[in-house]
Length: 442
Image (cartoon, rainbow, N blue to C red):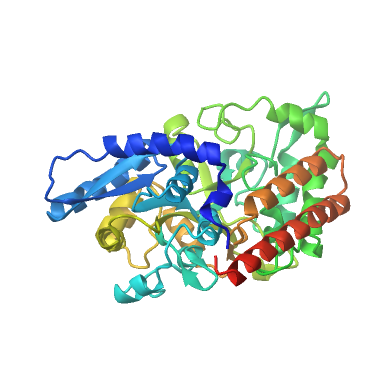
């Protein structure tokens, strides 16, 4: 099994260790020496940090034995790995769901199976999709924080002007709408119905949306499946219809994501895949936008894929080698109770990973489509990123191939074969290294 030092260079380890030690000293003021201080690191900022700080403050006030020192850390995941390798980990850190395999394979975090069993944290308590994210190789390695699903966001006014009084249900129906809405004048795109590369955060998702898998969950990359090929062909169809250069030129005129010139919020793109958080930006930049959200359309010949969605969430992990394990567990369990969890998720304007939710949570929630995002997490068609530590490399290869296909510089057939040929050896090598370390007892 990889050691933590395999993930960082010695020089970087030394430099960041010094920085982290300084941070640790500053973040533990001796205001109450009778309490045990535990460090909790998160990458949240702004209102998301404030929402969690409210939960932390409540916990600190609820008892007089433990005090949680909360830190917002830029580059939190990497710094958590480095600090753990240096022997000075925080007790708890917040990471992304897709990062879990790397932390688990590195031996940086504890398995939480027994802790969950002792505290009633079981699948009956959680929304299925959210509970699945914290599992890796049949073990619980994390606990849920704030979940997110994604949906097709659409501009109601633009669809209505094109003659549609409802959003698309199938991909074929969406393609028809795209053809009608997209406008090209004097060789330039001046309006887009939908662009697979906008915002470009989930270039890997199109295969799964067509029913494809990116790997078999064990030892085989499956990028060259018929479903993934169909997805790449669909992506290429946009460039063939409207021109790769024209699409690139149009996208270059989009403003910053959080600005009123955002492609979707400014009406330059009629439909876009976005997450539960998008409402926050709409309310800040263009609150008058007449929009809606639905599950992403499914292929007409695969109705069994209806209701599919990407699912991910921020998750809490317990670091191996932390100073105050028992106290950290007490805080983790506290965060999994309905009151604290709803306070956190409501404050961040997301859904809760708990099945049970209060009436006030629904009635006062800022997102008008919050029940949709919550319902999609129950869908058997909800999917996550592949649970492998080489996912960052795999994702990068898919993105590069998608760019080539979008520019019509590589055919869909060439693209999937290229990614397959690049990634299978990397997966084989990683698995062999894991097995060698296991046999060596490392």
